[in-house]
Amino acid sequence: MEGTPTNFSARGETCHFTFAGTFRITRWYGVTNSTVEIDCKQGFSATVTQCSFFVATHPTLNAAAVRNDPHALSGILQVAAERGRVKKFELGDPRISFGHTGSSTNLESVRL
Image (cartoon, rainbow, N blue to C red; front, side, top):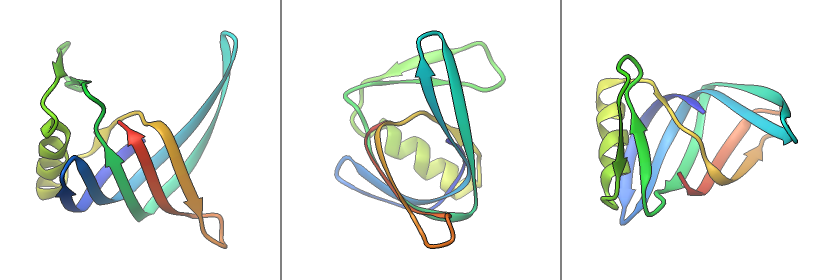
């Protein structure tokens, strides 16, 4: 998913925010894949919990860092929400709810 978080709040290791952007679902078949792209520019509620660690990368620099701090993700998302920055990340074990018009209404992920 790639977009802008807003209305950020954290409770423990769980982050709650509104996500507006693009959500891509990719399914792999051996070495080939197919991708469905969902336009979520209207925004929807998202709840994510950080894994024990994750890799943070910089979009314009050839740099990455492993983040072991259990509150590192909430810090990154909070700053992005405050400054209106676009973030791109992959989810593990996502659960997505869709509304009557096919738009996303809620997202939960136990790993990010």
